Image (cartoon, rainbow, N blue to C red; front, side, top):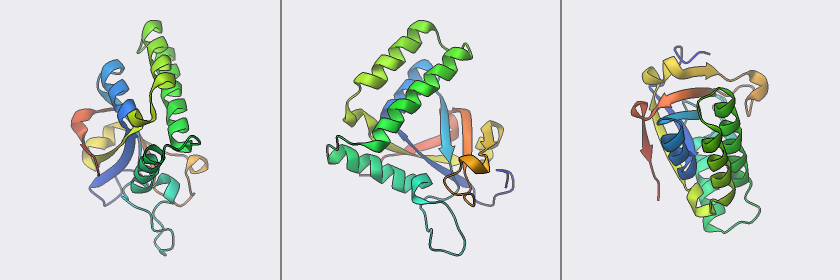
Length: 165
């Protein structure tokens, strides 16, 4: 289902404070977000939405628990560090950042403390997202039935950020 076809007016995503700040500083306030029209997951419902690993609120809560619990085996934080580095690789290859910026982003991703991975909930207007979206291939989704989308180069003006305490 394309983003134009869904009925929900809002998309949700979770990003970390570190990723948000890197996007602002190095990527011209443009963001890469994996999103869904569902805030939470209800995998027991006959109307399947998204599994917990793609649910914005579940992702948010996992980051929060890893930080608050000082979890040294923090899977989500480790994956976010890798994602930041992968994003820097892509941006360097596309010529959107310099080698110097690339080196800085890699160093930041390695040296950042767990607290710098505080989660932020992104609330995105579906209409504003349409020009920036690409459909996630079935093989890359957390569940083949889930609705998941990627937004590339999304300007900050197309979404709001909520911090849940």
